[in-house]
Length: 396
Image 1 (tube, rainbow, N blue to C red):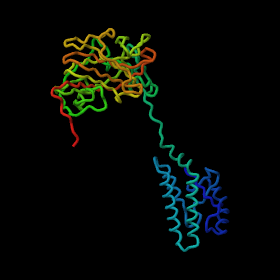
Image 2 (image 1 turned 90 degrees about the vertical axis):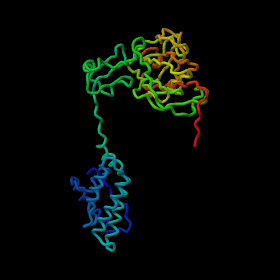
Image 3 (image 1 turned 30 degrees about the vertical axis):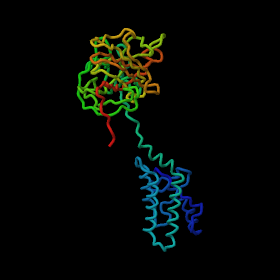
Image 4 (image 1 turned 135 degrees about the vertical axis):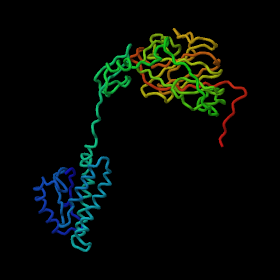
């Protein structure tokens, strides 16, 4: 049996007469001799002692012991509940065999209590062993693993556990299949600033009127409006409202290359560029006012982002890809705290101006290989200047 129960008969059971103690001792050897009997309440597995199925015939605990073993072997079973049911079953066996005034009724119940004491005291290992079958080794999938490179490096027959956290894993496929179906590892479409830019397409969600909270940099903590509706296509977007434009945009730099300038103002060092694996977004200013971009709480744990915004305060600029820091309007590494996510705020922007938003990963050694890449989101909000001021929401 899975469970070995020790009835501590020699500890002296309450109300047990000498004849009971002698009978227990005389039957102990017989129980040991029947060690291969599968229907028993103990097999000596804990400390070498075994106990009787039927200490007081016709009262037998075999069914109770078997049910207890089955309970311990049920995945997720509560051990205390199994033990409580075990005692109830043994008490029931005593009640079925004897009337309460019979001489052996109380000794039978005391023996049941001793069996319960034994499993509570020594049954921990039996319970753990019985539960062991519930923990099945997870199936290990293999497939293609895409790692950063130019072009990205693809490895076949890699398990999902061996594919690095900063790479992309594709189960049940090969690098050849990736090439045939998607052209290879999925480099972000906005990886190259010069040729592939995501432009704002426009959207008109209804704004939620209220006051900005938790960010004193936006409008000085004053009156503003925020739309909480996300973009349907997860792209940069603007609304036609005259108050606030806001949406979320997906960012993934795990397989991105680096084509932005190494000089990123205060976010770079003369010795090396910490700004690696960058992707680019084009943003047309929908109104004059303040732009706030936040990544706080919107990225992978491993993603240590960097953020830069390039452009001009003038209308009609063409969003030319930067070659240095001449058109840099703002940059940030760890705005959100904790050495991870970024955020910038830019005031006095003019409606119709064009900006380039650059998102990358911080690199400790100035190379893509040392970058803490990952995926996340940009929370982009444009807070328009209004006259007269926007109404302030009041609590009911």
